[in-house]
Length: 321
Image (cartoon, rainbow, N blue to C red; front, side, top):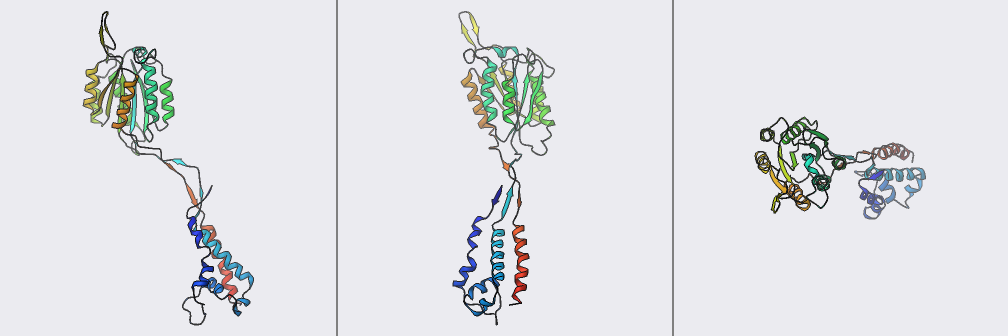
């Protein structure tokens, strides 16, 4: 589309006609400066104007219109393009082991369903950041690489099912995979940002090759900050014994967060989990709204060049008057 960058320059259009009333009559004899168009208008009704041809007058008018058009800076705007931001590189590691099917956080909804709803909203709000998704159980795997397409990452999370990666919990391997992917990210050199991992689980490390605390120390040395979230109903003592999430290893999760200068959060129900993500959002604010750049090409050179070409015959015609 055509865009006018400086539309107020159109106010200069009547300037030559205004000069007729504010400037004294210009005389060719002894003049230090000759203004063809202004002088021509200022001598309205004089014998000299009657000699000047109508074509030359029209040329001067056209030249002035083209000069004003060039001063208004007409531009051609192309389609807007997204601009890479210097936001955070944020990975979500979500436990999908068998225990995540337990419905103890919001009515009949499983733990995973609650996480999908709350974490999905969290992802969509991270405007300007690159977000990725890791699913882990017996083994971790990358479900969505780091990307600014937040809706796609959220959709991948919604399509997750319990048990897709096994039945046990490999927390250390999940941290190791997250660190590896963040360090191998091709955009890191151009857009370093900050590396953040949000690890959510309802159990303790009982699978995998890497010890969680050893993985946390490696993450800390690489500058990766880890926020750990323990989910599941609180343990309660009843007539028939204890109930709630008794498998959760809060000690290890707290140690991981402390080593990597992050924080540990406990979410016993859907509202608590929503509050956890809201607190993380404040601790790690997103880069802000997406930025866009609209390429454009300048068109002022065309009326300017045409004005210069038309001014040449106008000057030559003056010598014949």
